Image (tube, rainbow, N blue to C red; front, top):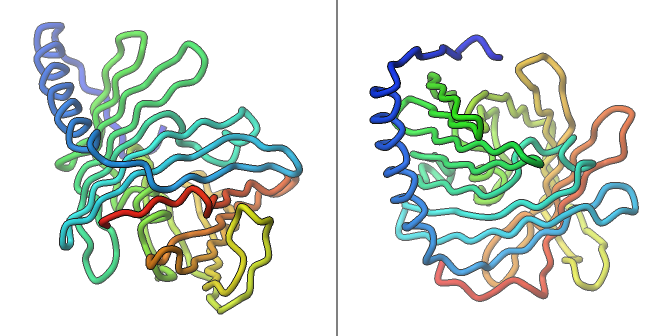
Length: 246
């Protein structure tokens, strides 16, 4: 448990009122994202194994954006990516950088379920056993918005998963040609290399390749390197990129 957490001890009646209010907000956010058309499909791979899928939908209106998606991964990939299940984020672009205003996550792991909402300086967590926790929201923008909506290499950046903040440190950026199989993008890319520092002091190396696809610059490959384990890779299926007003 990170040091910014604090447990709220509430009476059952007060907990019920707060839970109802939070759930009403969750339903409103889901309704806002339910109309988005799926337009990005990533496949996860660890070593030679196909290990899951990430499906994203997003819409942009001026500087405002909405992002939602589903993450279905194997247990192997869950070692690399903490998020899983369904998620949604709303926010605004500031100088080309997505800054989320609210982040919602429905996480599932076997029989355990967790609903997390980070909004207005607070993170509320509901678990399947009926437990309730209210935390101080972490700094930064949510990781999903930053990874999938930023169209340029990032400067020193704080990101979060709704509960904890992480430090994304740029290492270098350069133009590179990328070669992948026919269903994935091959061609000119902008490669961005980062160090990803967790709250426990451990680090990961993360590389993002970005390219123009249907008039938009998108991450076409994301690779996470973990010591002593095979790399985790997400690759965009270019044959499934739908036309989008965004």
